Length: 295
Image (cartoon, rainbow, N blue to C red; front, top):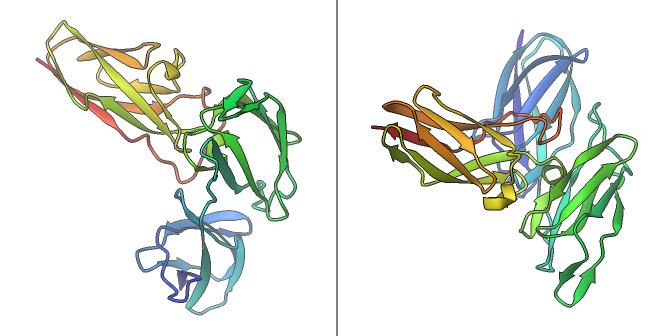
């Protein structure tokens, strides 16, 4: 077994190390191990001899482009493999009425999804943007030869998204009110954070209290109040012996005290409201919680 060092640096003249790069290793197409680079851009693994496939990715809203996957061979000696990561800034829309949605699509074999067509149909319309009327027409766009796509979509508007030949996105998506967003986070909406107002609660036994909830998606979309509707995309976990929680259709949850004690309300994503089968890696829990004390 040999000690293999992976070193990831950016392509700037300073060649700065890139941390938090997820490196997954496969041998004969079978997953072997994985790990993240440290603050020096380094990951070390003890591996047997053989031919390996290395797949790399970096989580985050602004990221790097890495040539992935890459193949390497271990033959009886310790070795260091260097990987370059090119800093990539997602483009922003110039017109304040639009959000520039950009990103990459890949196939299940990690190859680029070239010339893949995506349809965006404006569900609400017409929309008046400054001195123009935006009709609810279907917009067609394609990934380029590198699997990259970029399109300007109306902020806060709702679109139906379809990807022919691969699958149909059967839910409508709302565009975040920001200058840019990562496309995959827009067309596959996943809640990342829940904020409670107030941030903690003291309640008397037998009484009830309403707490407002604001949800933030990976795309940057923020929903609160009546925007959440009755079909919440999350579920609430807590000690049911101490409190009960009833989500309303106005962006608030009603908390009713059952007996004295303390508990913390946490949030989990609910399927299939966000799309059956959506998975992302590395997995992340929904951040945000509400401490509740019953006296």
